[in-house]
Length: 124
Image (tube, rainbow, N blue to C red; front, side, top):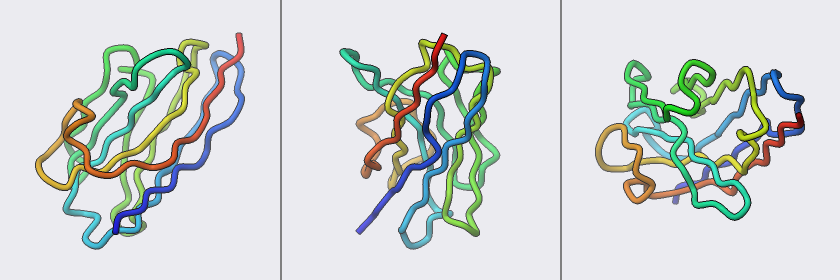
């Protein structure tokens, strides 16, 4: 059974930074692509970033490209999302997810298991 636990969310002023972590309890974590998604109030869940099993292939939503960085530490079974130059429109609940079959994907339906989410609030 896969469990994903996000942490690191909080309240930050516009222009600030946060680093989200997602700890995975899953065998052979290093075999799987991981993704970050977010959902703002009244909006659908949207793709943020994804990383392949080894960490050398990443993809980002245009809205976060150049500001966010996804990375992973397979020895710690953890994936990270470093967020910089935060904007009020980045306010959302952020979720990590694991893709058990296939490589990086921006499609939420391709992911098998999800964490409970962590709230990020950016004040103007």
